[in-house]
Length: 260
Image 1 (spheres, rainbow, N blue to C red):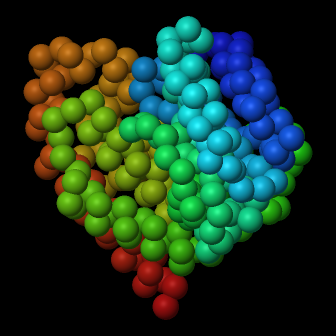
Image 2 (cartoon, helix red, strand yellow):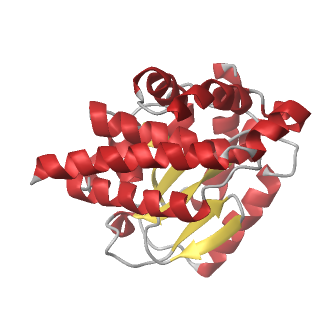
Image 3 (cartoon, rainbow, N blue to C red):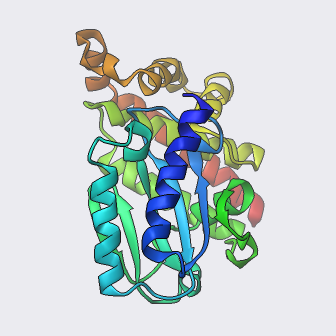
């Protein structure tokens, strides 16, 4: 991915958003893969956060939904179509406060009454998020304590146990996310999925780490998932995901033991 292509995509995004809510915008930030130069066109999202001064009216939400449809029309390039994130009024940065914002998600757009960023996303944004428009209000982001971050990983582990299955391209994300959480638990730092997976391929204990090179290959070249060999590999990934989750649980147990 060329940096110039990313800059062009972000310029288009900023322009379209400013047309609708320029008077409301405090800041627009990007975070996640794009910040780490780890964006994979055709796989994943271009994550953003737009912070506004006030709650978004129903009419503004409808206009922003139409903007999303325009950006996903195929006329603005693949990176623009990958945009996903939240429009949050500044009081809603505190997840205990209610209001009205908007979420652009993989499965569509929806109004939200509370922040849906969880604990880790504000933590990551405050550490590594990049301001692409407006003023820096990172100090307004409430960083969760370590216990809250660990609790979120525990919840993630429960989700993996319930839904972590192979069989499709995005099944590899279970392994990549586990790698990122393991990296944070052991190194106390955030990083890209690629770097975390490379780190885990050398530092994880279980045999599941041997699958990470293939997972990274598929993330960078998602069209490979249509190949019979890779399809078979993905189908057989369920046990590997379970093994990775087991190591994550062991690391969480160690972490919580140290806290006591």
